[in-house]
Length: 254
Image (tube, rainbow, N blue to C red; front, top):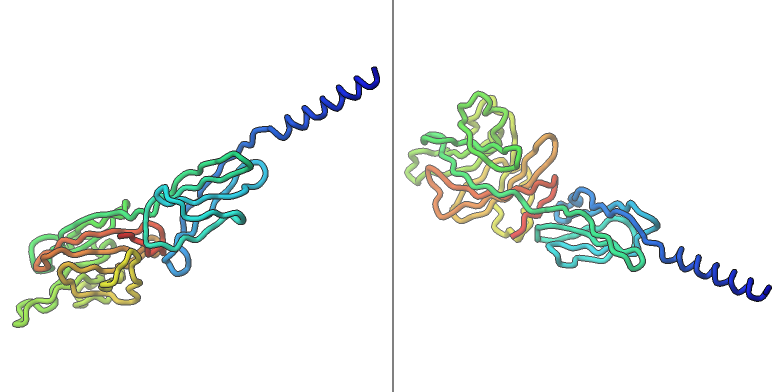
């Protein structure tokens, strides 16, 4: 009888241990807001694990393609020329947890602006959705809202006009008295998915079929964008914009 009792006790202990080891792991993997690295050419991903124990590994995906596998720490910097949607899959033992997604896809817009002396709007403002819009330089609120304007500094020149996209402060023609926003622009002929920093260049000649790096500040944060011209640059020009909505990030993608 005593022997049977010992056997039953051992069996019960073994079953209890198996039950404990087989408990389902629960948790939530959160991909935090994306940030730029110091150089602006890399995306810093960080995550929070709200669950039992530690993650054994985290697999990082961009546009459903694997980027990296991380087995320690809770952050990773991805240097890339691509934009798109990031997600994580974390593993604890044999169970996987998929995170929320975060995007680096820039906001696109297309506008036609007119040279200052021509009919039509010459100013460019940035909407709350990061899309560029046109505005008349004569509007009462234009001095506080215009980031760039289109101008011809040498109208009637025998060599032909030169058209600029310019900051309203420290601009190509120093024309816009009372305007408050300083923004930056520089042609970026070697653009490869990451815009160059235009530095302190406040205006640039616009040429046809060309690309330009933009830098400007919204609510104290620095943003980068790409502007592209088409085949026609004259008294009006159509500009295609891609604005990166993550502060300090220069990755625009192809």
